[in-house]
Each structure stands twice: as C-alpha cells, then as structure tokens.
Length: 275
Image (cartoon, rainbow, N blue to C red; front, side, top):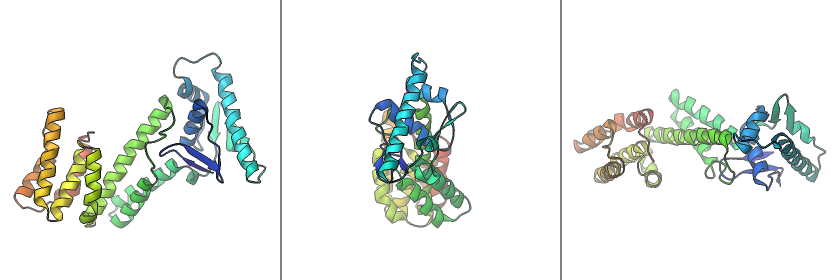
C-alpha cells in the first residue's frame, strides 16, 4: 500500500488505485489516511463530511462510503492475486474506524518521522544528518496537501499542521546548510523562495546572509531594501530588529555568521513570517 497526501491524493495497492472518484468518499479516505493506525470516531468523520448540520441519513451514508472503500481495497487485492480482507485494512472499532497500514505507507507519516529525526540531529549539532533528513522530508512534497480533495473541519486542522511543519523543516534545513558553508548553493533556491514569499523575513534573512557570505554585499543590501519597501507598502511595518541589525552589520563590513542562522530563527520564533 502506498498513500500520498502531500499533494494530490493518491492511494494504491501494488499499483492498483483505491481512490474513489466521488468527492465525499475521497474526503473520507484522506482523513483516515492522515490518521492511519489511529481510530477516527464516527462523529469526527461525519463532521468532516457534512459539518455541523448533519443530514438524517448521515450515519447510513457514512456506512455506505466505508463499504465503497472496502470494495476498492478488496478489488485491488484480488487484482494483485491476493485474497485480502478489506475489513482488516479498514477496520471497524468501537465508535469509529481505523485504516491499518504500515507507517511507511503514508507519505505524511514518513514526513513526520524524517522531520523529527532531522530536528533532533540539528539539536545535537549533527548538521550533515540534519540537512539530509530534513531535505528528504521536504522532497516528499508534490504540492499543497490534498490539493484535489475538499477540506472539512477535520482535514483543515491536519492540512494546516502539515503546511506549518513544512515551513519549519525547510527553514531549518537551510539553516543547517548555511552552517555547513553551502551559501553559494543556496542562493538560487532562496531567490525562488523569497519570490514566492515576498514578505517572509526569515527566508530573506537567509538570502541576505548567503549573498553576503558569497561576497555579494551590494546584492544582499538590495534584497534587504526590496523587502523593506514591500513591508512598508503592504503592512506599514519596518523590518524587524534582527534584520535591521543584519543590514547594519553588512554596511559596517562586519561578519554576519553569528546573526545568520540565529537571527532568522528569532524571526520565526517571533512570528515575523508573513506571506
């Protein structure tokens, strides 16, 4: 079984898709996959599918959707020459249902595992491992979470959690790479990221540091000024204190190494991540 939610929804058993075509069964599969090996209660499932205003037919319709998913699972198993018991994969539990698959089968679960390992490696100063693990976590993404699935309240919570975690993983991987002296390699990536997030101060701080350490101080100051203009025009705000300190360090020709990663981390902790 392979289930991907970090982008459009895909789910297949040895290459045979089990994704329903109808919208609500897709929603149901997505929520079960994001909670793989954990019981999702019937009220949670119904809230996801219908919100607060439940139709009278909701319990019966939910059971129908579960049966449809099980038929998909059974057909995929048979297509792969296995008898397969769909009720063991999508199991009924007291008060709810659970999708029982290996943790490594779901890309979101693997992302969480790699992220945790990468953050731990960074915390103990193993920057090579941190960069590799966090880079592998980021590589699992194929677009926005469940880009082709409607999000009810339950899915919205999970999607927000994953998207926020994605930003944290990316930012910390860049910090690890900067500490490893990979500023030249990061410049192109950071230009692309700041282009997509024109008011994200942490990403701009990383780009400024990378440019400065690569001997491109004028370009670094241009990036700072462009960010300042954007923040003032769009929000009426000046860049935060750490960024202003970075600009002054560059103007004085002082090393920015101490600021480089810790200053951007302060921006993240302080909530100055916009856009």
